[in-house]
Length: 117
Image 1: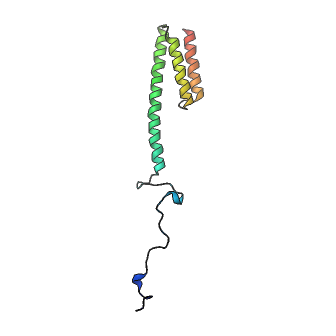
Image 2: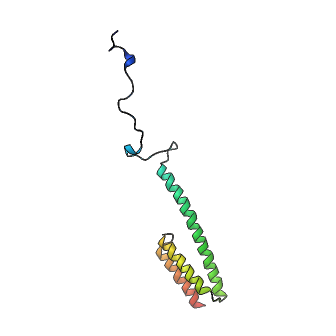
């Protein structure tokens, strides 16, 4: 047998090397579970943001309740509480936790409560 007829020397592998980097092909990296790593990161960020937003919202609700109690008891500290609540609402508006109209609506309603008392 001649050397050209010897099939053992022929490689059956493809001539193009396999891509090792996902970014080289323009595709997102995938895990074995089939989820993209960017989607997993986004879900992780959303969980953190949601927990922080819920904490801020709950503290705002308790502040509003304390303000209403202070108004009904006619305390002198209610004006300070109102300014603190308005500051919190402005921060929530700035961070897009609340829509601007909602924060403005809450501020005007709380101010109207103080005028009634």
